[in-house]
Image (cartoon, rainbow, N blue to C red; front, top):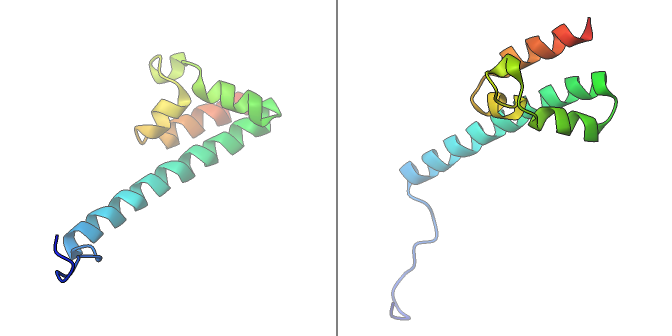
Length: 87
């Protein structure tokens, strides 16, 4: 590129909208993960134990981990299961 040619520093509107949507989706997934993680920590007593539980394959989720289930958008199902463990 020649020194006198302008550079594009801004995203095109469609690209920006797509980037924003992807960020929003990732943010929702992270929020769901930490909501479940907080509930699990309340039962198992530590972040380390909660993290281990989140990453273990669970029969309740078809052999997937709670983290995988949350990543698939199944956070309500995971939270319901976690709440059933509290009783």
